[in-house]
Image (tube, rainbow, N blue to C red):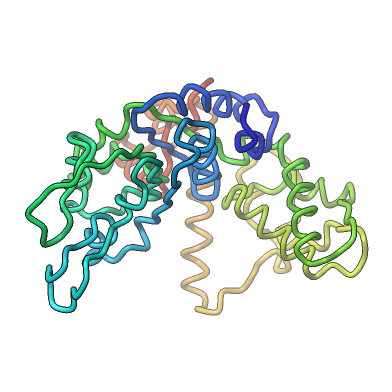
Length: 336
C-alpha cells in the first residue's frame, strides 16, 4: 500500500475496512463519493486515493464547495473567456482545467447550487465543459471524487440535489467511521498529533500521561479526528513540561459509560460559557444532545431507521428529518 495510504492512521476493524478499499477505488476511473461526519478525514482519504492511482503525477485539486459563493461557483469551476462579463479582461482557467489529467476533489458537494450541479453532470457524462462566455466546449480528463457530510438521498427527496447527478457520483462509495466508533485508534492518533505539534513548535519529545489517554478515550469527540488534532495542538502549544496531563486537554472530563448523559456536562465547571448568551448556549446544548442521542440509537439498531424511530417513540418521517438536520447517515451505523 502506498505512502499516502499509510498516513491514514488506525488499526480498528471498521477503519481497516475502509482503508482496505483504497487499492480498488484508486484503480477505477469511476467517480467516488466519500460520506462521513465533519472531521472524519474525507480530504485525507481523497488524497490517498489520488496518490495511490496512476494519476499521482498529475494535480490533486481540492475545492470546498461550501466556501464558494453562489454567484462565483461556475466561474471558479469552469473559468471564463475574455469579455464574458464586465471586468473579464483576460481569459481565466477554472479549477476543472487545473485538475486536467488528475483528480478534482469536491468537498461538501451538497452545497453546490442547482445550476452548477447541472453543469457538473455534463462533465461527468461527456468529459467536457464550457467556460462562461465561451461558445466552445473543452474536453477534460479528470477523476471526480466528491465528499458529503449529509445523506444526499435526503436532499434528492427534498429536491435540493439532482437525482441524476447523485447516481453519477455514487458509482463507488465509502463511508468513513466517526471517531467514537474507532476509539481504539485514539491513543495512536493522539501520539502522532503530539509528535507533529511538538516538531512544529520546536519542542522536544512530549508524552501523554495515562490520565490524558483516559480522558481522551472517555470523550465523545463530536468533531471527530479534526477536533482531536485541534485539542492536541492547543495542549502542546500551552504545555509547560514534557508530559501532557488530562488537565491540559480542553475537553469535558467524563467517565466512559453507555449513557447519553455522559456527553452532557452536569457540573458548572463542565460548561463552557457561550459569549452570545443563554439562548445560544441552550440551542447548542440541545443540538449536542440530539446528535448524541440519535447516534446512540442508530448504533444500537445497526442503522435501521424504523427500529430506531420506534425506540425513540417518533414517526419515521420525523426521525429522518432529525437525521438530516444533524447530517447523520444510517449507513455510518450499519453492521459491517
